[in-house]
Length: 477
Image (cartoon, rainbow, N blue to C red):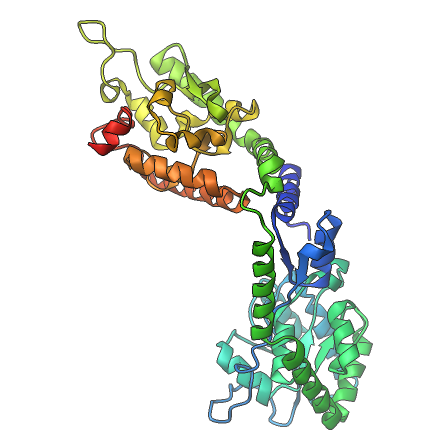
């Protein structure tokens, strides 16, 4: 639809889509078009299941004990064609007003359109209806689902399945309103080709009109209004179709069966596409996307650090990476080199400068590690790289944190960061090693941004950073 136009963002989204499909053991598509799109990305058809939105036939059932919503200006004997849901650009509701104008010229004052919902285009639609004196168009605010169900079941005559004439919509959408109409026993008028139009035609559950043909639209409604018994029979066929194919319980069981089958065929050590190469691709594409925003920040911070703290601007330290291989970690310097009378460096909290505190508060000191990510020494997400001297202090279980690349942020960072004990931190690191995936990494990145903005869990109380890890004896004491 052209909402997102940034080439880097589009490229990143395309790669995320590809990696997500190939990382999954099974893909569930909402429509045939979405399923075809997944298989076009190289996913076998055997791993793709189409499960559309379902029909709640219990909710959408007439109940005379419940109040019937009143629509101001709607005559009691009017033939009602209703549209429910968002009034957005993609819905192309101008086509309905075009048909309303044709009906007005045909003198069919007995046919009314009721628009229920809200959206960006609603004010313009109302203004046009007033300007053209289309008093057969009534606009209603969104209403509770139970009230809507009673209106559809007991007052409406036709449900309008309207979308703009965009080929991607033909097989790539699965709007809830279509299934609500079927569950309500309403015949459906569809104004675009595709899988829903094909189902309506095959089941005799409504009518299909060509897109952007207001006269055909108006004539179809005229025929339906003049043959109300036949129109009601279309609705009954639609309800039967809903009960046969689209019950929510049936569709839910289909999903459960697919998930159980995927789980049964998945080996414990299966390497998904994301684990093989998708994580690295995500790192590089994310760097490409954020570079225009990060580079000015790097320049400004570097200048400020150089002006206030002198050289060097960057803090460099050798840390163990993937499989404990050493690499040089980069950070902005946040501490001075103050020493005591014996020449020993003062404690971290005494050497931490005001500028350093500010940089750490917003994690700006970590930005240079994007260079480590670019070189492949680190990833955006993974256990934080600790000190080389800790390697000999790990238990065999704790050493497993080096089975993946270290990260700028990680599972431990969003669950306590430096406020955690070493035991808690290692436990979270190992959990990540055993469970990392595209979904988990996306969750970690999102929560990292949130925690940074909230300035949450920056350090342990009484320490500028984590206290030194002294080994397993420290955990037991």
